[in-house]
Length: 142
Ligand SMILES: [Zn+2]
Ligand SMILES: [Zn+2]
Image 1: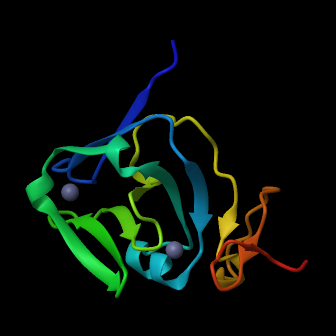
Image 2 (image 1 turned 90 degrees about the vertical axis):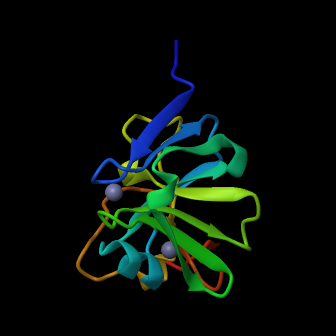
């Protein structure tokens, strides 16, 4: 029987969460803010409706950082693991950092968002759509 959820957590183990399937989408984000927040070339998020995401342990260790006037990220204050992104552009939705999910989820990454902001020192070899522009999700001219 297929699993109907996946668990995940931060590096130190204080914060544990669960995602219940189905998820909404999965994509790589190459925007500058994600790069800085995660210290990585890009970040892979899985989007879920808020009701399908639950912190099961360590909620008191989670810190909210407002990375802009309308969006915020949460990380573990003990180990610094970045765990979620939420914003007014995506009401009722939580973007969960896929790298901190333990188990397989119900879909594969579908696209590269904000690819026009991508670093020049990583070259993804997949055939996924390269998106960008104002919203980060518009088709880019080849
Ligand atoms: Zn932690
Ligand atoms: Zn981003």
